Image 1 (cartoon, rainbow, N blue to C red):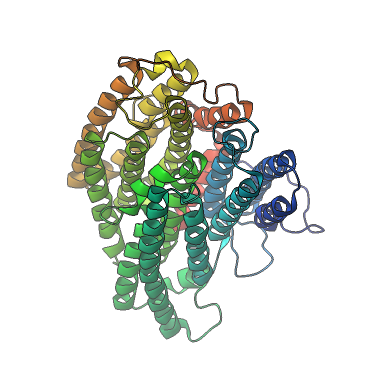
Image 2 (cartoon, rainbow, N blue to C red; image 1 turned 120 degrees about the horizontal axis):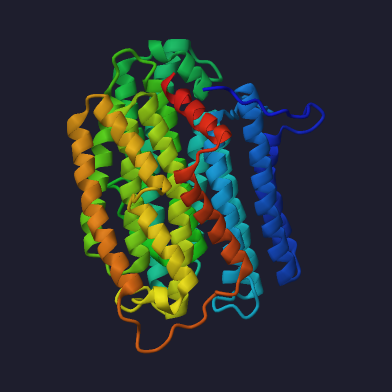
Length: 504
């Protein structure tokens, strides 16, 4: 594949653009906290969303040109894998912020929040984005753990934002289960550090990913096996892999709609990113295959657990939450199949699922807002009642089911090709069976939701006239649909480079 080099201006006189990515949401959180009016707060978060996307694109340009982006300290490191996570977090962050402005930041909107509460919500969203950006840029595995723990603390406040009994229960359940899971990940990180110390000595950079990759061939396989088991259980809990997923349906269902989009489209991928960083270390150990068997096992269990729960769901947001479990399982299976093709498919699927699921959560939030309920029986006939929202749900639902030519079909095809091509026929066939069950269940729900009999009373207008929400949803739908038809060369380069970061 021919290389593409983007001409970039020298940045030596400026702060590294990767630092700007971290600084923007922090500055926005501070400015929101001191803003005096609702329009000021709305303008700050929208400006931060667009500025973050611009800074991320500049960072990716530098990565494609130089291999890595400039950072101010060895504790940070930005390569193609980091760039991919930054890209999807920034895009979903922008769409969620624009939706938030119309959802609860606009005077007269159905979910209008009191201004002090709105400022708190915006500040937490900005801090949430900061912790995810920090996770993407962390070189030190200790800082990566701190960043993911930070995502838990901040997002738990957002899950319980409405302060209803069910929201608070979901928030506490999320906080406790993910914190317990991350305690396992912390122990695994310490064991990995012990393996590093025994190999390279007590050096200050013993937890740096770059150091661990360099000494990987000489690490003690026994210690690494113990570390991998704890890390996969810990970060797997955060990623929503079954049977560690039990927090996910409640949190996604009770959180404000834009937060649900961030949880599903961005947060889960941060945890999977941490596992990929660990996988890159273990692949340097000759003959070490434990991590890929664990990825494959957890992935297939996640697909089948989600498939059977999807069949019996009656709540719209819980239905989409279980689809998150399924697709994190598909990504895990792709990693388990291994090889550059398997990793490429997993990373491609990560981007496709993030955009598709976030768009569905936002459109589903508009539908639930208009219908006054999330019950699937009560929101039937949505295509006739809300044509624009119904159309997004139709397109997004078909894309989520893996119908060609949508992007999820393309990435699932790549993952299955990696499985069959690598000789893992049993795993690939089991994945096909799970996908077939999910396909039937989703089409059943879609037909009732979109084409079923309409409710006796018409739906409320909801947010059909909200430009920001429409722009955010349209952006995500364009990504979900467009990547199935055409993969731009710079993005293709980024995906292949990110896969090689893990497998090289």
